[in-house]
Length: 181
Image 1 (tube, rainbow, N blue to C red):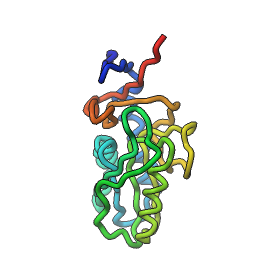
Image 2 (image 1 turned 135 degrees about the horizontal axis):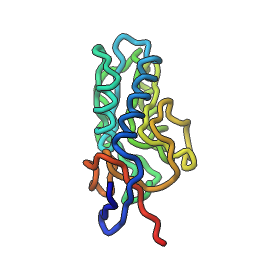
Image 3 (image 1 turned 90 degrees about the vertical axis):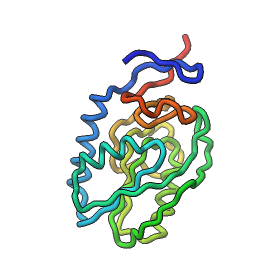
């Protein structure tokens, strides 16, 4: 993993694809252990979580589960905007179903709170959240996700689905914004 530059900003290696794969296996095992429903539904939050969701969903390996996609947006550039915009909503019936939301990152908590509220209105059996990354020091509202691959400091990161203005999502590793000396 070498340093990269995106939009004039330098990023250095932070979490390798091997570390990511190891933690995905751990989180998948936790979800399999806790999931009691015959047909849970996994809700991937686009765009950032699509790579994590694909790898996690395969690792969970529950043949009678479903996966669907929604899209919310709260970031502008390298900062959370503090507001959550719904771009694409849920169309499936989740009444009395176990729902596991798959997020790329829980930062301030605003998106997670909005998602949980929206899903609760549809009367699921339960709603749990699985997040690739969680920034506990940045959480302003809501609760931590039930399943977390990595807890990280409040730094700007990208790669493995996470972006800077839609760039760098396809990187296999996660990079962190390099501090200027």
